[in-house]
Length: 519
Image (cartoon, rainbow, N blue to C red):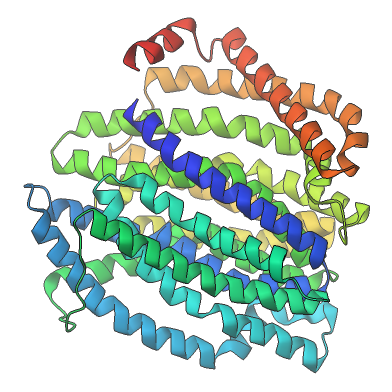
């Protein structure tokens, strides 16, 4: 119940952030479309997104939180905060130098992230514009990395909701930029979006500084000292950055290959599909990962191995219960969902078809994307960041090979399908290793419920497939009608899934009674 409640607060705020991101992307589709200006901004936005995944949602938290919890194990929070200050003293100058270096190297970085825009043959002025957007967004790297340190402290203190609310500020800044300051053409609006990214990073950092002070945590900037704790932290961060960011690395590779091998607008099609895929991934995967890491590390610090195992089992059960219906919806009703959300303004029916196919391919790997977030805390809580990185490197190799095989065969569907395959390989290796080490075993309850949840999701998907033609006509009308039609489609699917869960025995009346009694 504590796991579900924590996921409810973190997942709910993450969902708000993702919905605002969807509003942002809808406005971007209207004012920027899916041409070169859109591709240029999305390439510039890719690097900040990578760092957000590596640090705010991955590497720094994975290395820092278990160490912070061990420092605070005896109730001495001051010792833990002292460790955080020493980490900040080393992190700040490194980030400053790194940000300056990235600003200087913006030209080759942009070229690499976009695969040179090879098929699109940008003019010199167009490519210079893409580099300019990258330089505008690069300061966000430092801002989000500093914010991740403060967010990790708050998560360790079980103030999950504060850190989960921070990304909302980024999306508010970007939505406000698009709505109030969009330019006369796509290029001017893309520039506004880039400025909004850095402005949003400033807001996030200020919010977390304020929240830490309210929690009684005031961070001082010290002279850097390379002591044993800092060495251990850095030793854990480096492999964790690759392990935690495997999905982002895969997405970057897919984006670069799409820019090099596919037609103009392909990068945008993959981006819009991924944004929809990020709704359940953000709410469920990131939410569970945020809650599980400090929870499991705290239990292991206290020697409560059985309780840690129970928490991981319930985490997987909760992840699949929430993820499988989203997967079915994106496979069986991708076209009406994309049409209702994006198809207006500069976004055409042809764009809808291309994005819908990419979304279906992405969603095949949605359960594995989420399970990576659930399984990796089992390694990080035991200070093992190297094993996930080995598997992440293997999954990146699978992704590259998959892209090279699938892009010439099935076009825009190739990159997301290769990404889904590589994530599934990653999950299989993580699960097998935890089992071999005796750190995880699926209990009887989990083994019983997984096939029933899968059957319930398939039943829901079939109903959505039959309902989709009846709502298609309402999804290209005015905004209130589109929202109503999408709400009816989603509510109908949720109702069918709930009924199917009870019909298949995935959930029973006793579960509801227990839930009510515990409340």
